[in-house]
Length: 327
Ligand code: ACO
Image 1: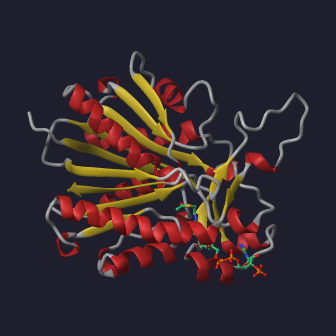
Image 2: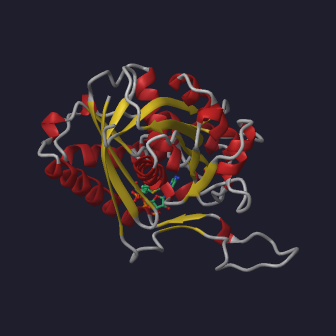
C-alpha cells in the first residue's frame, strides 16, 4: 500500500440559468465594461430553487460515475461550503440522503473559497488513518443566496456551482495522484472577507434580515493578499519537492478574478497557455471553483494523463493553499 491518495473520479455541475453582465446591468448599477476589465467575468450561473446540497448531489453523481463506483462504496462525505443549506443538518448529511445511502461519515468543512483544498487535505488524513476509506469530496456553493444585490462591489463577482472528486488509496489507470497539499492561514485580517449572520449577530423572530447576513469584502486588500499568498505557497511546495515552475504542465488557480489569475501566473513564471481559466463563464464559485475547474479541465482534455498540475487557492479567514496533482 502506498502512502499516496488518488483521485478516482471527477464531476461538476452548474445551474442552467446563465446571467450575462448585460443581464446584471438591468438591476445593478454596473456596466459590462467595468466587470469585464476588472474581473474578466462575462457571465455566471445562478440557481433557480436549488440548494448547495442539490448542486453537490449532481456533481457527486458525475464523480461516482467517472470513478465507476456505487455511492454505497463511500465511507465519508466531505462538503466544503460557506453557503450550506442549513446549519443543522450539515450539507454533507443532506448529500448522503440524496445519494440514498447511510452509515457514512458526513462532514461540512468551512474555509471559505479555500474550503475544497482544505477538504482534500482532510480526505488524505482519513485515507492515512484507514486505507479502505473512499471519500467523496465536494465543493458546493449557492453564493448568490448570500450576496447583497444592492452592493455592486460584490454581487457581480460570484456564481453558483459544485464540483466533486472521489479520494481513495487505490491507484488505477485513470486516477490522478495527489502528490502533496500545503495549507496556510492568518487570523489578523478576518474582517477583509466576511459573511456574517451567525452567533455574532443574534436576532429574534420577525427581525428584518440585515446587512450582516451578506458577503462583505475589501476587494483591494484581498487582491493584494491573494497575489502574494498563492505564489508564496506554490514556491514552498516547489522547494519541498525540488521542482521549479518549468516542471508544471498545467496550473489551476482559484477562479476568483482574471487579474489575480494573471498576476499569480506571472509571479510563478507559468506561461498563459498552461493556465486553466473558466472564471469568465462561471464567476467566483468560492469552494466550488477548484473542483469545477479540475473536472472541466479533465473533461475538455486541457489536462492530460501524465500532466503535473499545480492548484492554488485563497479565501476568507484568511486561508490559502496549494496542491500538486499528477494526472
Ligand atoms: N460596477 C461599476 N462600478 C463599480 C462596481 C461595479 N460592479 N463595483 C465598484 N465600482 C466602483 C466603485 O464604487 C469605485 O467608484 P469610485 O471610484 O467612484 O468610488 C470604483 O468602481 C473603483 O472601485 P474599487 O473597489 O477601487 O475597484 P478595484 O479597481 O479595486 O476593483 C475588484 C474591484 C474587482 C473587486 C478588485 O478589488 C479585485 O479584483 N479584488 C479581488 C477580490 C476578489 O476577487 N475577491 C473574490 C472573493 S475572495 C477570493 O475568492 C479570493
